Length: 177
Image (tube, rainbow, N blue to C red):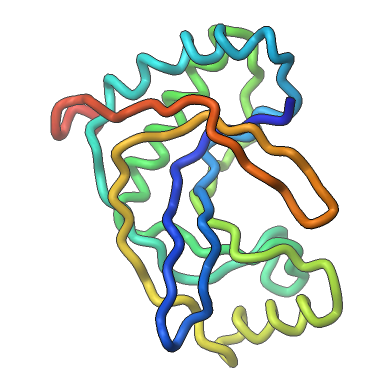
């Protein structure tokens, strides 16, 4: 099964902004994971939540991978709370290493994907956002109280995500940093 670790971000809408589907901030993409190894992954990462207190983050600003001039993925970054997200992702990487999951190449860039560029219309939309010709999504605060292990199933209509396990952040305030 295709799996990843994420912070859920709820859907929002406003008169100025179209509805953004419920989405997530990926902490770590795991790729194809044998179903029989899920219990070992869960056991390795569960303690991480005990060492991190709940925190808030702010999603703001638009950028793109691999670059602003050649966008393939357009995303909103994390401003406030960025250090807490980076620490959480780092601790998850350390825990995953104990069960043989190799590290990802740095740097980890905390973000929420807005859309992927798959057509000329997508490219025009991306360049309009990135050049400031079109309005960016309004900044928004997100309360982070847990992270999740998710399964991703690819379909012709896009990826479908199912939460397999939730991991509450139960550390004392300030314990994570």
